[in-house]
Length: 128
Image (cartoon, rainbow, N blue to C red; front, top):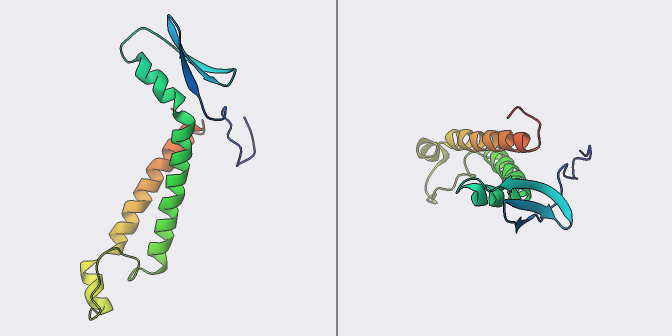
């Protein structure tokens, strides 16, 4: 495992699947990553999911960053950061009555918490 925060501790993408007689081998270039023994109808799907793990992890990390950016925007200016339509004549008090950005902030924080938990689990930093 790497201590560098920017270098993944896992084998880099892309991973691909070799379909052998009794198992699916997941590889990166010539490096062995994992294998799934062919025992049930789900085995191909499981191998495919494993092979897509590096890309999914990268997307999860990107989504976590996007959630934090959204939270920061909402916290900076609750009144004008919402996505609802604002009439030019609408005052701030009226706007706050129909647009509760506090709920939006809670929504994005919940997404971020869930995705960060999944990222931590994928990186081996939490119990499975």
